[in-house]
Structure formats: structure tokens, C-alpha cells
Length: 92
Image (tube, rainbow, N blue to C red):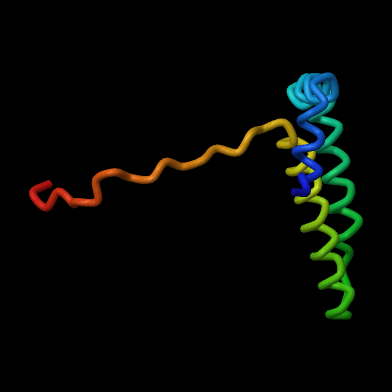
């Protein structure tokens, strides 16, 4: 079975710990915010061309997704437990 890039990354305990420390570092988070805002500023240039506007939107969406993945790389997904009691309380 092929593992995802995130799974391969989390197997390296040293890289995992270093990245986890980095993502709670105030200066790093401020730098990420500044870089994201700069990318959004550059991508959101006014235009009359619908294709260029759509391309700018896609760049902005990609930048936000990249930063989200970068900052949550060390988070383990939580599995929701299935409810055991499907009966509704109709008296409530």
C-alpha cells in the first residue's frame, strides 16, 4: 500500500518534532501570515479580464491551502466515533 506524503513525513520523528516546534513559533507564524498576505495582495490585482480574475482567485486559494497544509502537517486526524444510540429523546 502506498503511504501519503504526510504519513511518510510523520514517520521521521526528528523532522516531525522540529516541524511541530516551528509551527508554534510566533515569528514563524507572523512570517507565514506576511507571506500569505503578500501573495494575496499580488494575486488580487484589479482586472477586466474574467480569465485573469479567475486565475488570481485560484492562486489565492492555492496559497491558503498550502499554508493550511504546512501548519497542520503534524496534526493527526481525529476519527469521529459512531453514535451507539440512534434513538431520539422526543420528550426533550
